[in-house]
Image 1 (tube, helix red, strand yellow):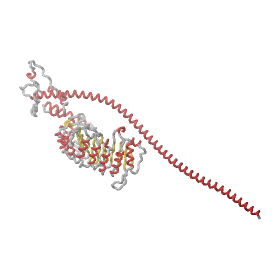
Image 2: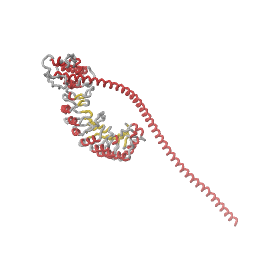
Image 3: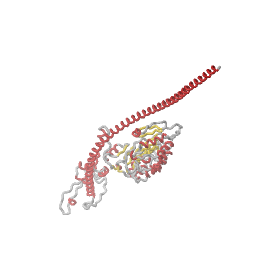
Image 4: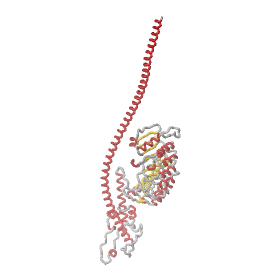
Length: 556
């Protein structure tokens, strides 16, 4: 009986031992499962890292391709700049050679001008001396040099058909006899000249003086009439010969043109003279639409006569540098339909003439400091007054602020004005709330006070922020200046275009600020988009100048 039980117990122990042996592989299998799961997680993580690395590599490849494209564009631009530099060097060399030739020509012309003036002065002195000789009383001495020119009357030498004795005045024997009593041969004078030499002498005189000399005698009148006839014949030949008729080169040609064309619409000084008396033509021009008075000798009486005669027709007027305030007032007072005025007032101008600007004026170009410069090439807006300022000063801006406060000024352009301060610019902008286009350049371009003054311009459409100093002289914008640009863009709801010309760092800072600005919506409830224009070279050097829904970047 004991033997089977022992066997059963032994079998039970073997079974338990086998169970224990079976549990050990299961634990190893479970451990292997855990290791496999951990390996799978590591593999999944590695795959994610590989995918991320692939994306970064693709992004890096795109950046490299973009950088290569930018480098190619920069290389093309540099090559173009090198070609332009070479062309400029060639032009500079040619200009230097031409400059040497021009200087030699100027020296020659100056010498010829000096000689001509001396000859003209001698002829005029001879003329005056002989007029005194002929008009003095017969019993009066002619050698004391104190005689005065007697007034000439029209009937002194014009009566009768034949040339009278006063055409040629010859000193008598008593007048020619010296103090010692010996008789000397009379000295030749202008009255002894033949007709051709007389015409040559008279043609060298000032045009107005030549017409006055015409009253001296019938012989002189005939000589002046011959000069006028010759000039008129030359003008007629030019007109009938075909082609473009050149502008009058002398005062006489201008006088004849005005006489022959009473309906002339454009007046300009002769091309070969710089001091033509306006009185020659002021009384005969009645239909002028455009007048450029640069090169004329201006008198108040002539200005007033010209303005009154063309008050209803004159539309465009250009005045020379340094014209005085009282000349401006005399000229502007009768003009009520003037459209465009280009003026350069004197440095000490009081600005009173600004009150006489006609209400019809649509463009006002002012060059300060009593100097002249080329007219600003800028398109005018469809309505309102365009004001363009060059070489402006703070007093000029203050005078404009007082005069234009009641005007609808839609466009203001201030350029080449390094002496203008931001404070004066701010005062002017505050008085012009109807501006649609404004361009404060130089030091005032990024001034916080200047940009804050634009908040009141509800119709503002375009702003030009141009710092035209050398790139090496342009300082970095401060945080307050960049923030001022951002606030201006948010406050002016109709703003569509901003031109930024500055260093690369400053342009990048402005773009970053505009992108982070809440532009809100315009008055029509639509989303706003601002187009930012930067110089082409700056555009190429910007870091990824992408455009988005709010800011679009362009190169010009």
